[in-house]
Image (cartoon, rainbow, N blue to C red; front, top):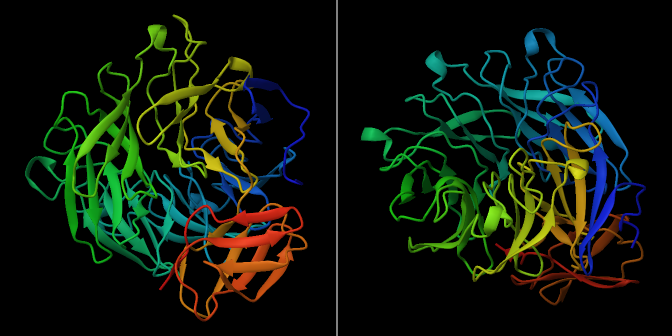
Length: 469
């Protein structure tokens, strides 16, 4: 396949059919340092991300990186007078249905509370909203996480501070920049509804949003919540309710079985973080407590949430621990865990290939996993890496829902020469735009299910089912 990487970079094979590749090492202020966010694969086949520090004004930047490891800085924050374009981006970007990239910056902006921005894939950035536009930052302050584009086409996110009670918010923003605060945390006595949300929201298959708060709740250790598009919030779980359920959750992923999975940065049986499962009925089960092995060789302190890959197992990182753990240094791991809780470490970081992975992984349509580390690498200020684990190529639809007659983007890795597109078995009209992108029309008679694309190299199936509305 064209997107399987063949790079002149540091490479180490952890297990059979598993290859770790150091794709890029950040080096200096101009190119950025200390990435905190993960990556997103765009419809042009490139990967995009943010770095929280560095750039022309040392306020962070947005970059594009090719599959062969060539990085281009697209925008350095604080490029505008008074830093009205924001500073210190710490959340991942998303590519919306209009083809543009959307993200948040946690600082600066017109009122000093951070921003929401939109950027073309070529790097033209526009500030959509500056937080703290209202008295006492009632509209929120310091968005730490990225955004979600919902079924209704609007964008949803959180701020870690500000709001009516200065404990964070959930907000909706239109692609044109109109912001509505849906909920202000700490609205209940003793903050039993949670405080300081720092992870991206997800929209569940049934339409409501789900998320976590890093603090607050009845025990002060964070919560799991749901919120309707209209702003009605329900606290579903309070951490600290069980002796080993963890503290400071890092967000959720909804699995294909309908349950939610996530990690906590602390707590658990060994006070080093956990992986948990949470059912829609409200039952939380701790699947794994880190530092279960001598010297924490299984990792500790996961600072990012999970992804569910195409083999239906989950993948994540721990920011510390692993077999490189010493008294003076602790570098972190990449792990795989089954829905039932069987954990396997698939990479142990070394100083040379990166340390302190803080962001969620992403699975590229070529099947490989991609991620970032906050530190380490050739210049000790962070890296971008790929990890192949033997998973095949697939296609991804943007978005995962649509009506009959709607145009849907289908993202892939080698789509040239495609001869067929079907929605759950029903043939669709389509156009091959590039080797990375097909546009297709949801056909009459289509039902919800898997999208498949037949190419000269074989049949590619979608990683998620497509829902016909």
